[in-house]
Image 1 (cartoon, rainbow, N blue to C red):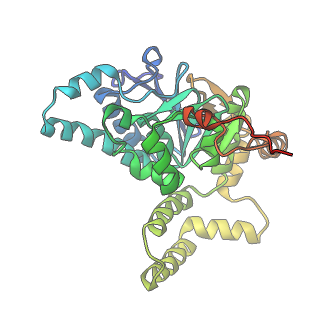
Image 2 (spheres, rainbow, N blue to C red):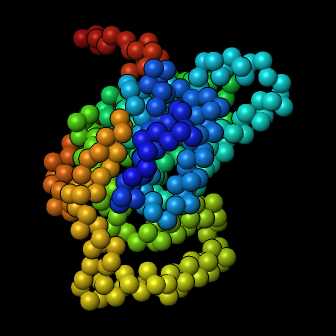
Image 3 (cartoon, helix red, strand yellow):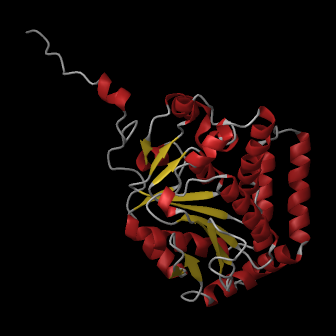
Amino acid sequence: MASARPPAFSSIRVLVDADGIATVTLDRPEIHNAFDDLMVAELTRALRDLDASPQVRVVILAASGKSFSAGANLNWMKRMAGYSEAQNMKDALGLAELMHTLYTLSKPTIARVHGPAYAGGLGLVACCDIAIATREATFCLSEVRLGLVPAVVAPYVIAAIGERQARRYFLTAEKFGAPEAFRIGLIHDLVEEDELGPALNALVTLLFMGGPKAIAECKDWIATVAQSPTDEKLVAESARRIARLRASSEGREGVSAFLEKRDSTWVAAAKSKAGGAKAGSAAGGKLPVATAKAVRAASAKAPPKAPPKPTPNATPTAAAKAARRPAVRRAR
């Protein structure tokens, strides 16, 4: 197992267990995991190393302490205030490369969110393939309050929540809660604090049921389709891709296993690891990956993903409160 904190990293922790589950933990709880150029560089380097490792099957992005990430570190912001435009450009490119690296990682990524996830922290959540959060998590894109724009995170946040919702939350910089983040598509699942680990483990188990190369190909294909018109070129590419994968060793094994009514090699491996594979917690701990039976049980017991009576914005905003007025009685 990798060292909990390799000497090369001072602001994050990276754990890779024997089953290929990598947990990258933002580890500056005393400043709510606010990031600076050092953390940006360390995260980028760690993600690239994990992506290049054939051992790694899934990457979990977590955080220690009470917050996921409060966004930019104040001291970093003070330094940036004195930078020239050229220096700011170099600095901003580093953050842009981090977001792009996470978004385009060939391995599946899961954001494990608790507490505040603001500005760039929210951007990290949007860059992950899957995001689960506690019901107490909060979110905010606060850049306009500082005379700035959420430029670097915009492509990924808009891809997650759509242009319409971005117009509201980019412009108002209002804080919103996890139920609203779920409603607009920023996060996939809402869970209680004590259910976060089991929910994460169930997702990891499901990802292990897929062919490793197929998952990487699937991620690449999603990005290609999302950015392309549905024309003859895309249709031809779709045929080329499935033909190539059918002829691949992994594709042949998967189809043969289905026809022979047996487990594929990767499904058999996932089942054999049930109860032994481990997924990192936000604090760097380890929890057993759920078995297929546990996944079904977790699904049956899972709380409703949305509040019983959802409202347009589950977290009342100042604007919403100001808009409330006593009902006017109709004269009789």
